[in-house]
Length: 239
Image (cartoon, rainbow, N blue to C red; front, side):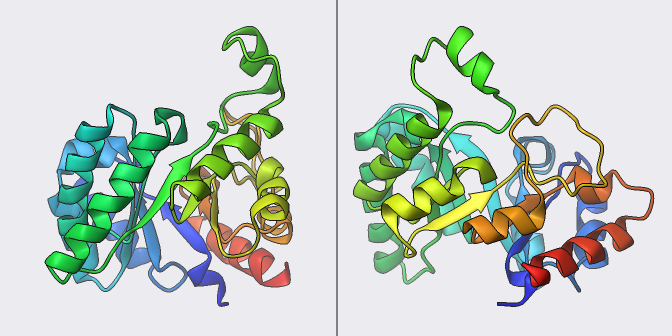
């Protein structure tokens, strides 16, 4: 698979015109762009349509986590919006995930729309093992928890999960190849550390079994963003 089909660029900005400039600027290397809370709150749903008009796909990263009825109704709107992928928190429970999948399938079939992929967020990459136990109160490891949440998402019929590179191989070995894994917290060796705790290089994540890797500051925060994304693309190919 070409590197541009495995690389997702995070548009973590609040100016919609600048976001579209980034889409145009990096279209040679990227087919899927992530729209998160900051950009969606600033620009609204129209940013998705404008990215789609450029022939690119959108991963809507809003991490829904609410009662099943609320998330399911929101998923209908998201399906009509035309995103390629969106996510919700696996910790919202089995009923929330199953109901969301059902209404997305029903809406897509009834209205003859492309069905977006639904991903379950496991444990945020900004959370360390120490925080997971001492602050959040879990007695088991993050790896064990991610494995459990991924299994829930699989049984609920979701298309895949969002998980750090450290848990990718565990998920892949437990569930198999027919399950998408999107991996954030990607940091090439030449990028300084930040608030992401469970990070991994592009080649390590791909080697472990990630289908997509998400990069943001590793590209946009560099002095030469084009050179950075070129190096990351080459690293994906080498993996």
